[in-house]
Image (cartoon, rainbow, N blue to C red; front, side, top):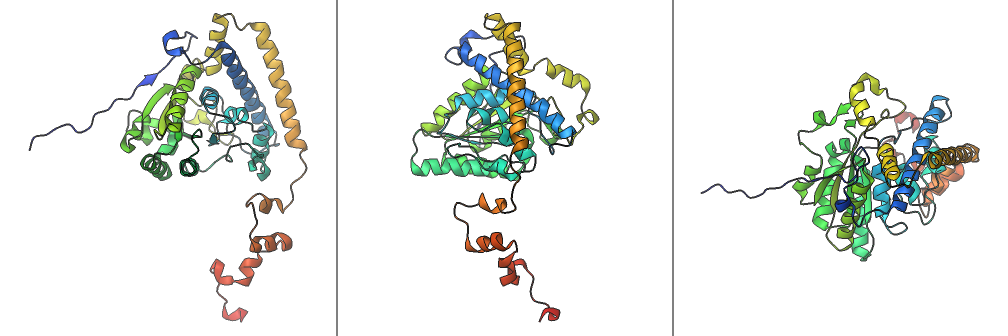
Length: 375
């Protein structure tokens, strides 16, 4: 029998705003207005300020481990603007702070969470955001389930976006979520922030594929790669993916090529495994720098506006820190009260007695069969 080609594919890369602030006007048509660019730039700068302050809080012993968003903010703000606030769901990992704030999460919740207070995971009513997910990749299954629920309920104008890093695509949960989302054609946007490092493991050592985006091809999911430090490209790709999702076209995979300018977390020291020249090269591609250059080039930004923004960012962040640190101390019962809409009887008893009464009533539940000494 003759040999024939049964499958061919290509991965496209999109960049609209380059490192020097130059805009491809043809590709940018119908994307962001200058006022929207200003708004996104402000959100990125405020998020960057929060990052710097959070780092100091951890170093001074006022907060636990914290993962900075520094360098990756364009992925969050560009995609968040493309999604519909109050209708769509955001299922984050832990480097999408600006997207969460844009969709209604009070900023101090993030600090409360990293201070070790689980009330930071209890989202306010009407905020369609799931808690931060530190386990790598597990939340993508939740995102797929939420999107499937939208489809079952026939919510015609609702979609879900989930964020994760390049390292998460090496996890089994990622593949399970992708396969189910594709076969069920759920309205979901898979957004991979490829920041080049899975903690200390570079992308090229954890996978042999030339791109992360091509992994979606195995599941029949439309896919593309964008410059993740370019708010125009991120917005355009996400907007198109959402439109496809709500029209019944199923999931889309977007790889945002970006870089983690800081350490993996405050418990990490990236100087031990990263070449300083590599970091320096990516600093020049900083999304805040290129966005400001663009705004200056079109006469929408200057040093005076920058100074005002810097002062505003510091003021906002100081208030956020104050709110987080002055929140009343948690009660032991809090761990029960935010888990279920209606607490099961056995957990009510545990909350009231502060004892594991359900295990005491049935030792076999915990594999603790009565020993001869206890008879």
